[in-house]
Image 1 (cartoon, rainbow, N blue to C red):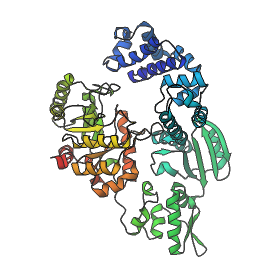
Image 2 (tube, rainbow, N blue to C red):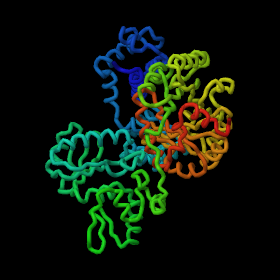
Image 3 (cartoon, rainbow, N blue to C red):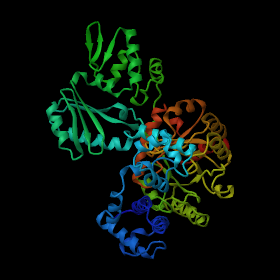
Length: 572
């Protein structure tokens, strides 16, 4: 059965397509309003199963029958036909901040602009400014948006890359003569997005590897085939490089193709101190080639301790390794609590009872439930009249199990004024308050800084959620004075979330090490809207490791009461 969330997305897409096509505004609004009506429906499965969706206010017979069609066939024919009648480029244009369906239609109708290339030309040539409602500020923002999309158009989030790499490796492992296989490149280093996938393999012939790859249903075409490298594309556009190396060269090849370029350049320079030349084929000293059996041995030969792949970015890891100061990086198994989980009360897919049951089975100790606050329309935020029942339910479940499995939290919107979405007499009912920005992303740097600083000053604020507001490959981060905001947070005892949603992975790992040294503490959270989403926390752990974090730097490594005590910090 189709999920409510999938139906809402289809209805919003239908509304968008109708507006792009110039349909009657009342019809456009009908689909938009239907999607809003569905957000607050708690018994969706029951209603669709009994074919009673028409009883929901705002959903008429036509739309309800289209939802049944979607559930039964996986598609809505009218939507499929409508979308196929529109140029694909219009939907890419919609990804630019400030361009909604109304403006995109105007560009298409008046200037025949139906892709990013034509839009960029119109901006640069001045044609855009002739169109009513398109001024210099919007023109500048559109150009910035195009630049962002061009930069990220060939990059993929880490979850997609991980899924693809696992499928390729699973296929290759069925080769009879394979001896070693590993992921390399930026994916092994746990970068937040990747352009392509690098895989190393030894023991198999190029022909055998090519045959296995071409048998994959995801396979599209070979780019090149040689004795040591096979490059191919998948149907989704993903580029994969497979390097075929000798067994005795596998370790140095793995190190080399893991990168980064900056790390490798620095290591080659350092190896000269030992009169050693290092490359993917081995370590050469006085015309003798050394083939280490592990990466630990490779670093040891150069008088360094092992450097985990996540740290190999050319940002001080070699100096630390020479002094035996590589930290013991945090691991997934160090986490005791799952923080930032949404429930079926609002926009999640599981009830409080199901979350408690999951904790008992999972190996974790507790979940901090953090539904959205009242102003979050898209996420169907928690209204004040539901608050008492919600908190009482958590108490009842904890009492039933005889232990504190669920912690009372809230993801509270930081309003444009900097105020939190609830007054303090409401916030005092929660044990954990995550403050997040969910709107007003286009504020200027000074205004956004002021907004965040005011939120930090609230005595009930514990955590800054997904601090930059970015959506990787989709939306750029908003601008704010990072030094002021982070310093204020440290002084106020407000901690930073490392949000593990693959489209966020926020805070950016490039800031984490310096923040750690300045005294900041962190939480690694899945921002989960389903049980399955909790698995995303592994990506947040990867980002934390890239930021040189240890177990002691992350407060949800504590058991529940120590976690709550640590969370209060300076505010206690």
